[in-house]
Image 1 (cartoon, rainbow, N blue to C red):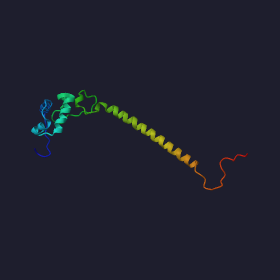
Image 2 (tube, helix red, strand yellow; image 1 turned 180 degrees about the vertical axis):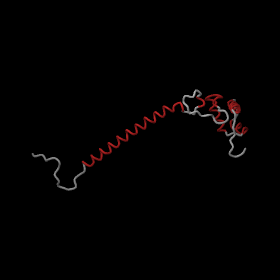
Image 3 (cartoon, one colour; image 1 turned 30 degrees about the vertical axis):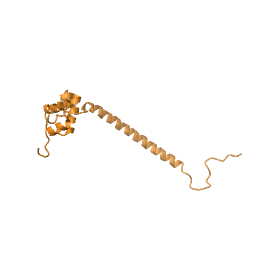
Amino acid sequence: MAEGKRRVFNREFKVSAVERILAGESGAALSRELHIRESQLAKWCRHFRRKGADGLRRAGRPRKSLDPADPDPSSRPKGVDNLAAARERISELECKIGQQQVELDFFRDALRHVGEARRPSDGSGVQASTLPSRR
């Protein structure tokens, strides 16, 4: 096999390999026989267990539709259904961050003013802010 070239397997090949593993054949032996990484076979098995033969993509890249109204959900990338909800949530969080920044600025200024008002005097013997009690 030429370096840099990927092998492409059709769905029937993948299903056949997965069925052999599920029938009890050794994954290591099968991977050597088919010249496939054992991790690839394990990945195919996981997909097969989740969605059956439909979980094993056909050879080549699937078409990606970014239209959430697309009637064929299998042609959409993962998460497109929640794209509008995610954008709305991001907008809410950005708004909240803005509000928090305004509050931080307010409290930072207030703390600075309080700190300036409570600074001790430099000189000794300066009259206290309250008069001593006379007994």
